[in-house]
Length: 179
Image (cartoon, rainbow, N blue to C red; front, side, top):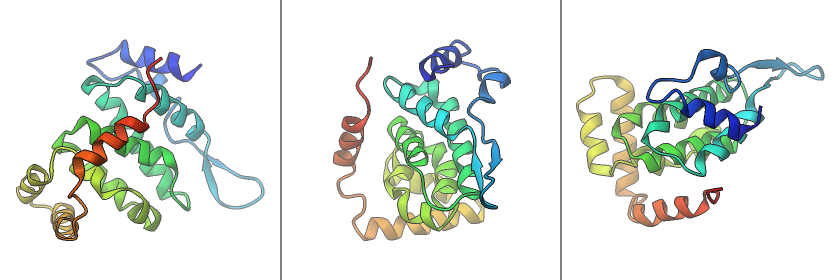
């Protein structure tokens, strides 16, 4: 199946989720590499292709699928070294959709390993705006939310969010052109 066909079929189920058989094509699937003990994700390349196809034209209706793809990237990054562009791509799409409720999943992606902590842009967490995100986190009485709020406040004080609209425009400009 081509990535464009996957996106078209996934969208045919909206507003509900795509059928499980379809999601299996992009779900994390560990594959042991014969030359070493490190695991790999046999669906990573296709998932990346789906993200690129999806990003040509996406909307709020695509949000559940993008969240699912990010969840799979998180699992992949729990089992791999480094950071792959596909996790950043998911973060960028959710940032552009700007739903404050996504901060939990985005924080999980940011903190999944050392490399994502360094390479997953903190701006992805505040797509809905810095003040609304901090207010949302303030009301969640869980340790992760407190950690995220403190981290975001430190980033705000450091000036990491001063040019958030320019950052948003840069992300939009970097997406593939619609077909």
